[in-house]
Image (cartoon, rainbow, N blue to C red; front, side, top):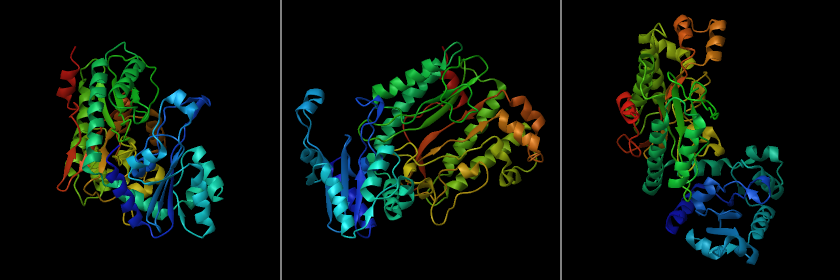
Length: 463
């Protein structure tokens, strides 16, 4: 946890964003994966953690805007708990860690909310994403489960997004620690990427590094020689010469929940072929030019389009695309090769605050989501501000099914050289991703630099 003053300051800042009523924050409970006592690793709700800091199950918090009071709810342990888990802090002691002097038993949470409702007070809540929380809120608030998302407080969502989007120095330090662990994860994966190794061996080693040095992985490890599948969680392939391996992974802090998210693509065996090198250098150029463009005041959609134009220009030089690259991007032809967004916000969640609604996080009143294929998947399009932490992850993919569909439809034949593209259907995909802080004057790539030039990767992978 951070200092108690950090959480007090955050709650006071949120109180200033809300007009009246109470804001409720149910923490997460344990989740069973085959029988009640056998649970998944506990993961606290990120927004609860942001405002209350405590990483234990069966807690809830209320910020009372009208009374200027914060209350933590939770149960003190009994002897059965002590036998199985050892001595535990009292709820009052837990409250003091978060700068809260008003604590009550967990059952009083429902009573407090019902009393507020009976007195006609506004009850602000965030859209729930876990089944048990949906049931809890549905019964407590008298709202059907299917209507909870639509009934969530937009005022609270916007207030939380405003605060959590700007990262403090202590938050940035936590993220950098996780990027440094990702350095170990990725460089180890690179050294292991040789013919005859099964993907699972590398994926398991990478996850073990996260657990040994920080906490769990921040999302299920993406690791595959079939990098043309963007989120490929299958790890059963054996690495063979001539293929490339995409590794997209990161870890999160066990205590504070801040995360990292890095992608590297390397040649199996440690040497890029000429064809691999040509495509890799294009993705790297898009990555570097996008990072260079990041600064306060620029819309991230503009940075995304810069990366898209870079990819189109270089693919045109290779003969995979044709015509005017700018026109090709305007039409959306580049999305055959780059069918996703350039990046997303990062923080306590690897896709930061996505449970609150992607458009609230990545867009605003003056920046709206595009409808064009590819660009529509851009999670962050809004104007950048100092303190934002985001990912930069351009890629080039040769997806056989998508190539076949567009070719059969005669799509963008003025911009795509399908005859040459056909010869790349066995290529796979390449993605390069870094975590970047928007500073007052520009940007800073976070953490220890992870090899990403051709020369750096080949040197590291030497046996």
